[in-house]
Image (cartoon, rainbow, N blue to C red; front, side, top):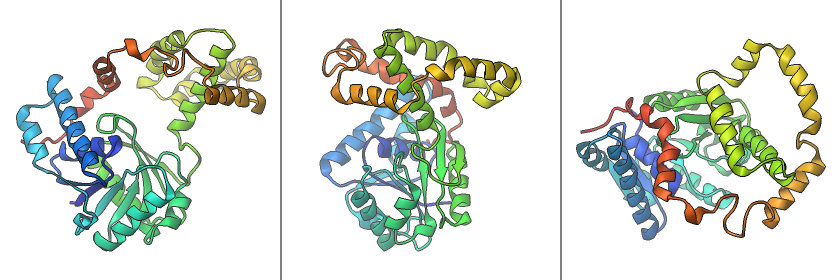
Length: 310
């Protein structure tokens, strides 16, 4: 069994640690400040409290899981660890420091899996003393709940590193997609940005509202592809129909560089949405606990597969 560490004590790191200890596996979390470590501990405890509130875990599960957790600021705690999830900020200097610490302290055959969502795997490889055992394993928030992980290799990634990563992610009950090379945004963020760009464009054009766009996504787009895939659906209905729709729709999409620039400029200047600080919704009127629960609710059933301690 891999000896696992998470390097990074922020939101992604704390949720990744929740998932690991939730499967009865010990986990070391490496942070860089006492304040950050305290936030990490509180976030992990809150994750367990949410699961308990939904009847998906017990206080005994929580207690047993937290006993598997070791949180520290000392990189030397990576000693003998064989698998490291890197979850630090998206900066070359920060990531390079993690990769050098892993090479110095961790097991000689340790794999480093970056949680990066925006940096090219080839760029990350150049920052690592051991590029053959470095890859991207990009999760989605909330990391302990949403099952998909995008695994991305680069030119020098060894197949054994891919194989060990897939084996561990299977143990953690993750659904995995593998990219043979990096592209900006990987898969899911490319899909999301295409929807986001078109949504902002339609709002700016006065076609509809943010609330109605969200309603359309929740009760049509999301529901349609929840049980069957996007391409599986298109293949089933026939490309003839989709070709006709495409011919009518593509010319009017926010797809040209000029239209894209208009949307980006609006976002950068804060013109899109409501008053400054409110975005598209007035968050002062929203219940943060309700939002957190709704964000997690589609994935509650998956927690029943966990091999919880206790």
